[in-house]
Length: 316
Image 1 (cartoon, helix red, strand yellow):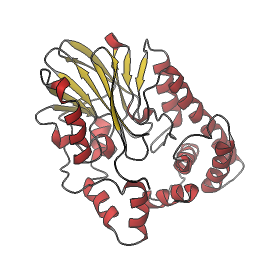
Image 2 (cartoon, helix red, strand yellow):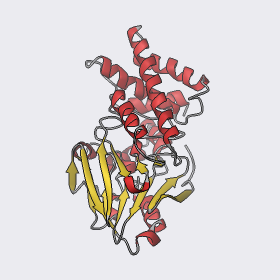
Image 3 (cartoon, helix red, strand yellow):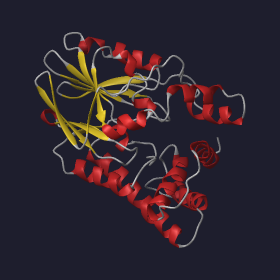
Image 4 (cartoon, helix red, strand yellow):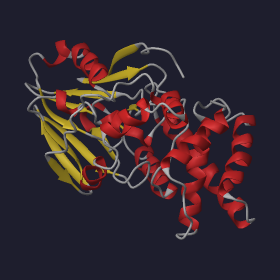
């Protein structure tokens, strides 16, 4: 478990487009984005708890003084991208229908209880999320939902929301600012960290990467990690293709999913291409997702057991 809050930084990645980054983007330390128009702004995602969300809002304060945040897009339902929603005042919150439906599945109170548990489960979850304070968070769900695509006008600028899930979660969205050549990807991109495929199928995620690779974009703001370009998109795509291929081969050979994850994980750690990725234990979740794709009757263990397996692979 890392200690304390990481350094944060604010970067201009295009005309009126900002990226707010938290540390190296490890567990829970997600990014946010700001698109500033004439008299109005759009915020891409809030953060995992109220303290760090308020720190982000304070940091971008000068940029929204004359262009208040009127719209918030939650790229997906994971709490590190939406638990701070209550702090955005009267802004309209927009997300896919699937994201809105999924937001209620892991309420902040559940994570607060897991972190407070005095047994082995609490110790496990604190090793992942112990720096975050989930008390006092009042979930705020989207005011507006969409399916497929939605074009928004924000202070005279056109912003495209494109649903690319289910992939990382049930309803992932990327946010494209065409006039600036910028895309905010949510957790469709982890840069420097291992992608985690909670929902899948992996083919949808690969298709999302292909979609971005075909766009006229210069700067890519991931859900976690540093700002990148199309090379970062290609790296994530390569990882997903590798995992799907290797997990499919081990499924065909009759290996248990966790045994397959151990085997593939060892290969990843030894590889020149993927060996430096953080959070490599996520391979346990990713292999489970491939096995579910190949066999709809495959039963994935509950989320606590999945975190135990990730921790075991990472020797937490």
